[in-house]
Length: 449
Image (cartoon, rainbow, N blue to C red):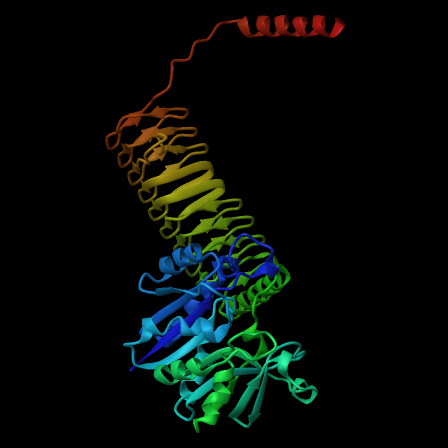
């Protein structure tokens, strides 16, 4: 029997004051709901159900991009968490095993915590994830004796003695599928909010003679995002953790507080990251590479010994082999650069294949877009591209070929050839000085007027 995930992502998030559904706001360059999905992936779920509501079509697109097999169900009325989980009943009707309930706005649950939740199910029919809060505030309280949970009480319905309890409810829960949905069917809404609380399943389980348990985690793991300020705090917490982890794993960060990581950034041992580097999603930098200051990388792979920047931009599909040099004010997009290739300054290389040890001079541009279609440029091994060469794709420059500076290359260049694609220079002796004198005289007369 497998485990199924139910991820609640239906809330409007009105306190975000945004047209974007709350669970689609980004943390570490990744939507909040995707953080929850990736956390749950540690359980190797047999089925994933995401409950959407506000902005459901937008949320569904992001969810299915992350996991095409995820099942989307809609909560048309927001009547509480038990009602939301209940929408997943039909999607899981034929799926035996346990269900773990996660939240699309709670991004920091660790795999180890979910493993502990699953392990505790061997001893209890229902298991709830709790945490000891420094400031319990308006969290629901867990009434427990050791790891045995008696019931959960929402803050609005709690007595003063119950509000003094610091063991709080994260909302994360694990139970057998059939048991969970049977209990949800019994949940009522006679409470201060008139909602169907998922927390009520614990009391209902106990009344039925079932056991309930509690597993605790660090409060930071349960951080839910409800406001822009909380999103900013969560971002700061993520970045601080990511920087510490990188340093502990043998990465040199010259100015750690200035480096921004994405949720999936991978940096190999002995990488050197200079100040003010930003990593977008899907970046791998292999051991021994250097990313110099003020560079931005997204969807890129940088191999051993490569040097990128300063002031470089690697866009999705940038693939740099070992010992490649990409210098200042260079942009690489959907291009593969072979071992030892150099693009040292002021160039754009897009939709291209660059051979090993090729050298692209300053101002090289692969002219890849005709206004409708993208076209590809191929530059052979050992080729030398002169400064300010425009390569009008589709075009191939052969191995060990050269292009003259300032050329516009529109036809293929054979291996070892020299291509010159520029107009002939015309020189008029003395005309330059005469022209400047005439212009200065005109300017002087305009100033007098």
